[in-house]
Image 1 (cartoon, helix red, strand yellow):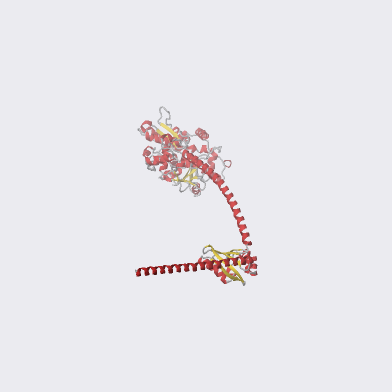
Image 2 (cartoon, rainbow, N blue to C red):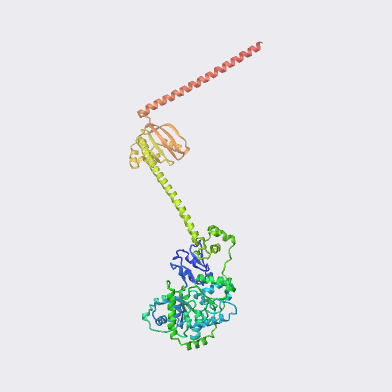
Length: 618
């Protein structure tokens, strides 16, 4: 049964529920991001429900099941736990309160006090004839669930007596018929699991409402005290069983000796005390030699099904006052007669071990966790308990089992936070330095950008003012840049185009120049070769063009000069005369070299002939 669940949408991941869970039934899974309840380990104590401030943890709601029972046409009895007088402190007269519950549709409203008297009688007999064996009381469901799951060796020490809820169900079925449906109303949420767990029709409970759920039902049906008449509980009526919600109320109901000198029962209440008591009972049974009257909460008056913020001692006072008032009108002869009559009911039960303990991690795993937390040395462990465990070692064991994470340790988390803050401060300092450097770099970049822009503007102005025509084209032979001189030499039609397309940027050059000129650009792009000083005709005028690669096979530029321009003509004449002179001088040098080489060969031949002649004459 999934008694308790977590609503992730409400959870703020504070992990308070993890710390308070006595059985480590709430797992912190980093991959999921939210705590998860392991239902097989849950004992229904409700500590997580109580501690959760955003109310993200909810228990099984039985209101709809109860309303279905009331609408079924069957007889339904409401069995009220005795702590109800402490819960509903806002109700002035209990008789109106009983009538309010009847108006929900219940055929019978029965107080559980008589059933507790029966249970108390059984405990008195058990403790009196224990024959050296000592027991835990089994009236509190979270207690016997805890022993079954986490101390299964002690199951035989659980008193084999049913809880007050089951005993009350047996009494109601005996009194009002086995076909009567029963809704138990109390302060505990673990009783919802107990009702399902019980096997046997005579003690069957069909639905369990908490006091909080009862308040919600009364509000839903707009049932108020000032609208209700007086009505009393249905019999049988109880005696001192009304004191049961107070921790030692069971003992007083059974007149069990609580004297420190001569009594043999220790009453234990509260989460930590209960856990410690079970552990000590297991470790030192021969030394303690006492029965334990155990309550997970501070008696039933502070159960998780009660309204949050309730005041314990006020509730206890109200319960005692209510019991006094009831006992003044109790017919003790009738009570004794009923006690004898119903004592034949079978109130015995048994418990089964349901071991949910996990294997203990190795010493190496535990020490590895402690070392990672900076607590591998004995002097470094605080055992502060803020994580919800008795010692750092126990906490490390739970971490090694995968049930929680190291961040649950306050000191470790605080140290990590300090280290994080330190690193963050260092990072912030570096960031400030980097930011300043970036600002300075940005300032320099803006200045350089401004200078580059000014230089570009200057170059653009120079380019436009040059008498020589300049053009740059891309691989598709579209103009990227052209100056005014080029536009002028291309004629008035192109000038009109430049009015529409400033600078002819993007225009296809093959539509603007003759084929022979366009072909030079195409050749330079395709072959990646420069073309020097080619004479061309554009609009019947002579020009000289040089085409050069700016980016091979991608961008080419061209310089076009008007050969009829006076300055160009003079420069070109001088240049070409210089070229002719240079070529003639080169030719003369070559002729001289050839003549010199021939004379040398002739002289060599004559000398060889003379040498031969002299040798032959001799």
